[in-house]
Image (tube, rainbow, N blue to C red; front, side):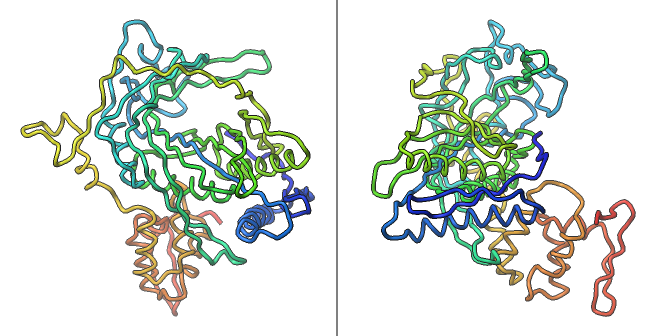
Length: 466
């Protein structure tokens, strides 16, 4: 797990005669100062992109994302091995996971249903026929020497993800944007390499090998780190609402690769770089903004951008080169010979007399779709007269996982949700909305109104942290 060990330094983006310039500020103090610095830098990117200045060199950035979400399933994608976080090393490995000769893959129904449900929630076209392929490359944590994925014909294509960005001095203005989804595909996860620098050796843990992944490929429709981070956050909330993935980035259940390039408006796109394995939304935004500025500085100084893979050093706050991609790697894709085509059905194509347990019905999965975060926000605004930014904040709080609420959260729910909410509406909001974090608090505490104020009698078991 990555932790921020010491106060960092703030990077701001400014406009100079040659384009964007980067200023390195003094070490930041409180967390609120760091947040203000980050949001202002991202806001300046948005404002500059919307208001290009005449006579200056203009730059436009393009950001595309490849998001890998671990599917919530009791077993792996092609084997019966259990899926559990923080299990003892190599304790959840089947013969197939270890790639022993003679073992064959057996497709996990739950993983297919999760992929279909996610595709429907993201407005994708679900392919009734999809194919599995082998992607060959050698690495120590990939015992078979190839990964089973869906390169030719994935399970879902041509979707969209709508997200909202808070702007303005008080974050009170909402800008709604949409990013296209190229495809969603099923694939295996690899094992985990544990590097021991002290002994100069690497150990391999195959517990994660073969775990089912959803790879969601977003088109380069974003232009800065804030947009990318907000899109990933919205996708995270959707996956959690669907139950298709816990999407806990701290446990590696959601990992992001960012493809970034810059160019002058009206000219061909520039050469892109890929920043791999970003496992924090905050670091995702920082890595993208830094890489955009690095490429602009490199080009303005007469250099060139290499097609390479980079990593983000969260301690230094910069990206570092990992490997060169100039020589395109040949993955030697080939059809997976041990898996037939994956066939899905709907109400019109389902053969008569077919056992519903033996097939996957797209229409039945569509009927099970829960209320999505965007719909929940709209309902809160209409039903309770809540301001859009407050509904956005409440849903964002809910996605942080089960936890005891702090007094700050409770005060926000009680007093700051909206001026239009009276006491009865606030209580109903906290008690009857299971999607909001206040529901946990409300159902375990005694609410009484005394002299126009709430008197909260809190059991010792549910005592709140200050």
